[in-house]
Image (tube, rainbow, N blue to C red; front, side, top):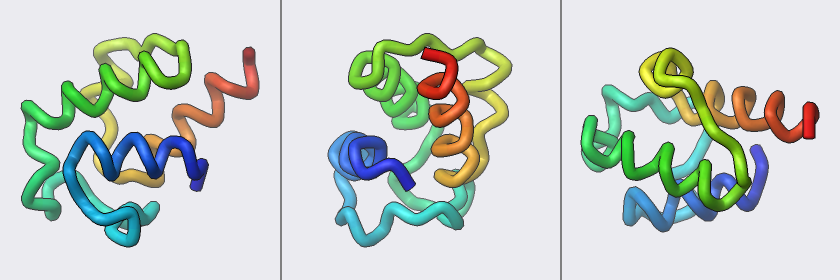
Length: 77
């Protein structure tokens, strides 16, 4: 997992970096609610200079999916 992404996730969701794993699920994490999901997407867009579509934002269910989505954007840059 991209370390900078992991740091942004940990800071935004106010969790320990050790909690940021590809398997972590949005529905199973107490601080990853719908409001924090939007905050997280905005923080990632700002940190990496990317812009996700609404479909992409809505489709993210795990931190691993988020990592893969971002990797695709960074590979195209």
